[in-house]
Length: 489
Image 1 (cartoon, helix red, strand yellow):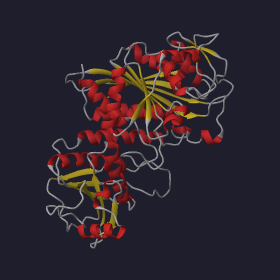
Image 2 (tube, helix red, strand yellow):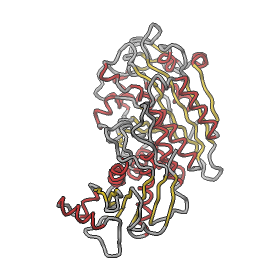
Image 3 (cartoon, rainbow, N blue to C red):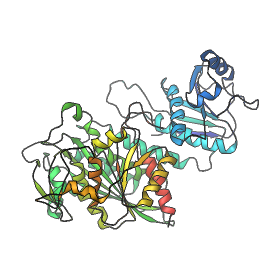
Image 4 (cartoon, rainbow, N blue to C red):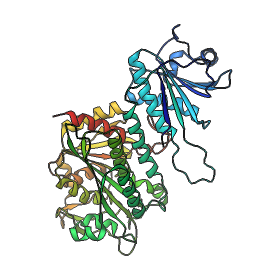
C-alpha cells in the first residue's frame, strides 16, 4: 500500500513540529529573502562547516537535526539537468530521511508555479516508490512503509494520479521480482496473477503446458519440460482500457523464468545466484499493465507472460536437439542457457497473431547486454526507426535511460544452421544480445516491435528515482512511450 498523500498549497511553517522534512528548492547560489525555509540557519552553518556552496546540494543533498529535534534534508533540483539526475538527487535526499524509518514525511517545495508543479511530481513519485517497504522474510523487518506523505507549496488538481500509478506499477514489478524461488514457482505465480486480474478487472486466460504441446509451441515446451511438476504456462491478460479515443492496441510480452539453472549447460554458482530474478521481464510487463489500468489510459492492452523454469533433469532439452516452434520454424539448440528467447518465441507468435499496433517485450535476456552497457541503461532493438527514436525520447522524459542497438540482417549469418531453419544462438556470446534480437525478430513479422533487454533490472543501491537494488526498470519508460504512441498517427 502506498502512503496517503495530504496536499496543502500553502508553504510549510518553518516552526512546524514535523519530525521528518524534505525541503526542495530550485538551483540557487543563495537563498532569496522571499524564502523562509525550515532549518535555514542550520543549513547555512552546515554548508559553511563543509565548505560547500548552496548550489552544490543540487548534486549532493545534505541533512541535519534541527533545534526542535526534527530531521531535515535539503535538495535543489536543477531543471537544466536530465530527469534521471533530478530524480537521483531527490531520491538520495529522501533516503536520508527513510534511514530513520519514519511513519510520515513532509515535503516542502519552493520556486515559481511551474517549478513547484514539476518538483512536486518528482518528489511525490520518489517518495511513494521508496516509501513502501518491499517484502522480506525477516522475523523483525528493518523497515515499515510510510503511512502519510504531506506536501506543502503545491496542490495538484489530479491528485498525482499518474505518479501514483507509476509507483504502484513499479512496486508490483519489484515486489514480485524479489520473492524467493521456493515461494514464486510457476504455479504460485499464475495464482497470484489470476487474483490480480480479478481485482483489476482484466480477462485471464492460461495456456497450460499440455495445451501448448497440442498447439505445437515446441520452443516453450522444450524449456518447460525439464521441470517437474509440469506447471509452466503462457498467461494471457486483456485490459479493455478507457472508452475514450484514440484507442491503440498494445501487446506486452514478458519473460517469466522463475528460476534459471542454465539447464544441462549448468550455470556455475556465481552466475546462478539471483536467478530467481529471471522472471523480471514478466513482472515489468505486469507492472506496466497495472500502471496503465490505474492511470485509466485509453489503450487496449494484451499482456502475454511466458512463465516457466529452466531446470536440469532427464526430460530437459539439450544441445543439438531440433525443435519446432508455434509458427513452424525449426530451431537447432546450441546452448540450454539461452532459454529466454525460446519461451519468448512462441509467446511472441501468440501476440503477433492478434495484429496489435505495437508489441513490446521485456526480458533479462543476455549477459552480453550487461557487458555492453553495465546496469545503468537498458538496451533496446526495434524493427522501425521511428519507434526507436520515440523510445529514446521516452527514456529521457521518464528517467529510465535506454540505448538503441543495431540488428541488421547480415547478423543472421551467425544463426545459419545446417540442419534446421535457424540456430538458437552461437556458443560465443560476444554480441549475443544482437543475435537474440535477430532471433526474436523471426516471430513478430511486420508488426511494429520493440525488444528491451533488461540490463538495468538490478543496480546496486538503486537507480534514478528507485532506491533498491531491484529497480523495476521499464514501467515508467513504457507508460511514457505508450502515452506518446497513443496520440501519434
